[in-house]
Length: 428
Figure 1 (spheres, rainbow, N blue to C red):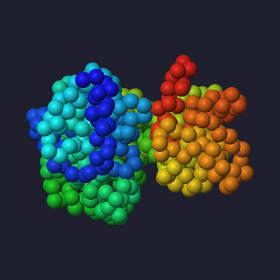
Figure 2 (tube, rainbow, N blue to C red):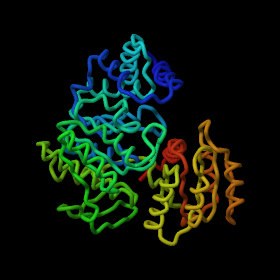
Figure 3 (cartoon, rainbow, N blue to C red):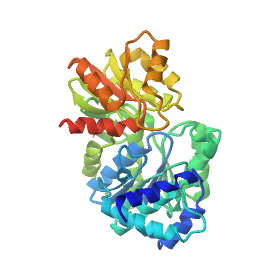
Figure 4 (tube, helix red, strand yellow):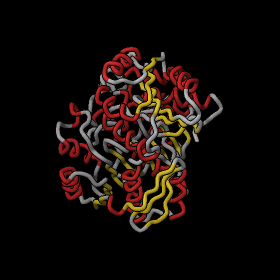
């Protein structure tokens, strides 16, 4: 099977849409010999922070000497990014080999698996073939009926911050969504929950009681002495002092508390994770496209914020890291997003806007976004065809002391990163 054939097999299932349920993925994995049953897992769900939490935890476990599989979504540029072992994404050759096996199994099924199910099966088969000792597995959608929930009881079920999302599939209230996400909790595993509303905590606690799963709740009040710099952040949490996190972003504090409590839960089960490995892992963790510094002069940030909550987090970061500074925003959005509210929240920090059109059929044209900004605010606005030309325009017209921030859609994060890497200035 060639790479193009593999991608055609994966993506051709897109017409099936999202069909939650475990029947198809269970059937598919059985036909593959149930490779998922030979692996151990940390299973991560939530609304915000799943990816960052997965990246940090994977880095810590790698530093502890384990062979670690990592399954994340979405990707920024290549599908291969979603399947990693020890920080290296799956090769085209291995992707094709796993896809060929999954296609052979799915061709014998009465009900064809969805795109998510096909890719989940490819990932789990690859991790088993490469003898991963543990897999950090990010849920694609929800929890209980997500394709990743085909795994046996994990070492730890991890739940980050929960908000209203995908209500057509997950429920109309926070409690309903929490119940769906808590479906990853199984008998015999520890559960780590990011502290949040009492209603959400009560739903998760009830599921833990039903499954006999010890519940570990993070302690925001035990997160102390946080210092934010463009070289990373320093903090204390519980009994640990002077920890350094390489990732930027004020919102990472709640995620790092989840990671540290998960590490302690694993250590309580007998996992050998030395303190120096924890510190090295947090310092070395990488999570691209989330308040990522791309260069220094002018200072350029890339952030995947694509909804009002994400923009609020971005605003807090800019106020914290760059107090009093105005920003040139390169903004591209999807037409179905609440970009009006996004603009209201980001505009007070804007020196000017450059609007771009992300490479996606759902993208809002740059000229239409430009007209929207001009109608709402008295700010300079120019448009560009795409994010690359928008970045070029910003760099040509900004001074070295200025600040540039690219945001609005993860669809433009990959091309933006390639732009800077191609100029010989990789992210620092």
